[in-house]
Image (tube, rainbow, N blue to C red):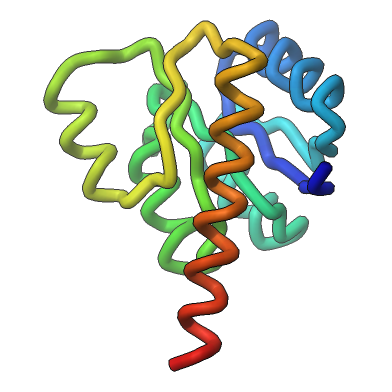
Length: 133
């Protein structure tokens, strides 16, 4: 089992706690839970998590897509989007921010486990590729 430190960005506290419980059962650590984009950027800088679980729709001036774009450009931390949204405009915007993966809400434990493992593997391949250049 890989040991990862994960930041959860979710504006619904009950959903955030459910995700935290799932991650803990899977053996992952949650470094923090935040509900606003600005706080996510600050926590990413402070804690340098291995992975970020990001809700697309946040109760803030900055949504999860804009937040993920800023985090990716500043810290190169992989982001997995979580969303109940399925409208095409949101999905197009989200793809431009180059997320690692999307997970539909409600989050299922087995899907989350596989997605995290894929994201971790992809991040490792990208890191190795950058080091070889």
